[in-house]
Image (cartoon, rainbow, N blue to C red; front, side, top):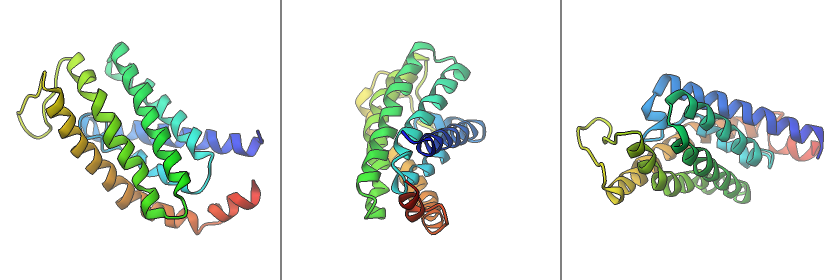
Length: 189
């Protein structure tokens, strides 16, 4: 592997992990709970520009989820997020890379993978640490996995769609037209 490729992977991983942890700090349970409104997910647009984003985003997600596991004290249950949350990010980035010629469609990759995968394990993780209440309500869904999954599918999908299309799309267009955009990456690779 070229050093420049590895450097891109490392920079993307660091940026994603730092942005995820900033989301935890400023948005709390909106970034890590049932809604999954992580501003760092906007960086998934990098997968439309460089294949280095696929391992970079995945590694950044692993790092952020391991740190979150330590901060929240979720213990071994936090490994669900480390494994499956990072898998969702990896698959979403791979879909985005494969569909990069159609940016609006490519942005749906992370939306779909996160909406389908994260709600499947998140209720188990949250119930394991003793709670699950739909945000902004007093509705308890303990023991109702299917209801929690449906809520998570909608909430995570909506949160991810807002991040990808409201923040990620403009970020992609700015980066793509910069000296470091898709054309520059292809030429230097």
